[in-house]
Length: 440
Image 1 (cartoon, one colour):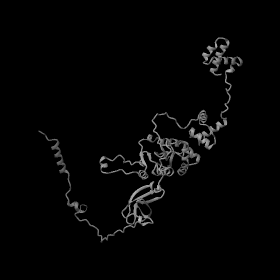
Image 2 (spheres, one colour):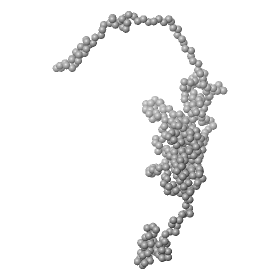
Image 3 (cartoon, rainbow, N blue to C red):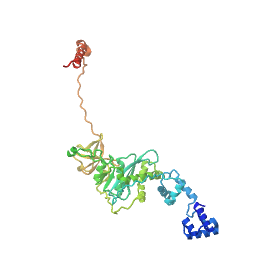
Image 4 (tube, rainbow, N blue to C red):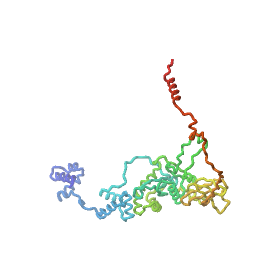
């Protein structure tokens, strides 16, 4: 019996013996007089056992079987699910093991087994939340994060973009390091699947913003000097996308929060799917985006999307590439990194005039191309003929014999030997005049 039950038995026994009234027992135990009468009748009939609840030591009807609990604990302690947080583990149990259990019940089972969630909870810091955008596509937050995605010590950078209004991932691409190619592929996924957004919110990395931005003096600005756009900034201008640089990670907190979720979930998803390389990961991420969005996305305030459809007149491959300026000669050839290329086309009228400036397009998808007046030309390697060097005729060469007056031959005998005695004497006299002269 518990201490509460023992106290009730002592008080009710005094009521039965006549030492306390029902009112006094009611005030002492904090129950009504009707309950005191009920307890008194029960103790007289059954004794102290009447105070013990009938479900004591009885297994609840909705309790889990011990084998079921042991299976869940064994799965959580396995190498595959050990790093999963409780919510992710619940989803994996239903999807991979066909085990359905509520989050609260799973939490109780794991905590009673002294298993804590690997996701740490820090003290809540109150802050003002920025309201989401009203429409999908008004603002895209873009960033990259290095992490051990395959469970080893080697880190890879995951490039991603998330819609501010819905929280949907619109692009994910994995590379060895944070690079322009990763952002190209992320942007390509977004444009081909959803459309062209209104603006992109990114950090002040050199890929997005030139390091000379804001360093021009007033004189330079009055002289007309400008800071050139980065390759990413130039491409966004061609697509009509506003690029907004953030000044702190907290400003683009939605994509930063996305990294925390993916760093907790993706390594486990990769291990279950057998993904162990960058190419396999990028194939897996294309399908994982849809599953993630179904689980975490929200409905925007306005149903109409702000994404614009990519026009048929724009070739996305010729926009998401590196562009550099070169000048072609009269044979439509240009030099590029110590190599020569020549423009080729079926329509000779489209070729640029001599000394015209063309844009050289470099991409991992098509290699090298050239562009002039919105026309893209294929290029071929070209070996430029070398100029013939003029050979100067040489006459008969005769050995040069130094004259007898040359110093290293007989000239040293013709010159006076140098002595430093006279010069030293003059220097000492000068020092005496400077430091020992008596001034009046």
